[in-house]
Image (cartoon, rainbow, N blue to C red):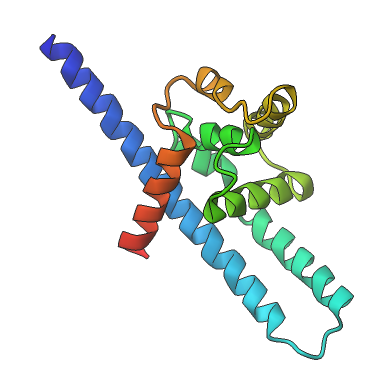
Length: 165
């Protein structure tokens, strides 16, 4: 009994560390995208269509700098993939940060080359959402090592952002 408890504690600690790394990466991504947008919106001499084209170009350039393989290699429990799957399956639709992550991932997958397992997690979530509305529970079965729901992961990301800026 004591050995099981110790193993469970180690797995939980590892998963929390993974969420911490995911939150740090999200903070870097969101602050970088915010700088890109604020830089462009500050230029008053650009017309609206030109401004949108420039934002897209800068976002694509920013997205290309993200090392998804490195991020996913630091995630042995696949919590990042589980979060992407759950969000694309319709979880946390009322959470603004979750919507930002979903939109960012959607844009990234459409405009840059990402690892296959990231695309698969995203597409699986979309498929789960098509079959039954908001059927994100199937993502738990797809990523059984991650013990957290999207709601819990978003709370941890928000807490990490609050504590560490």
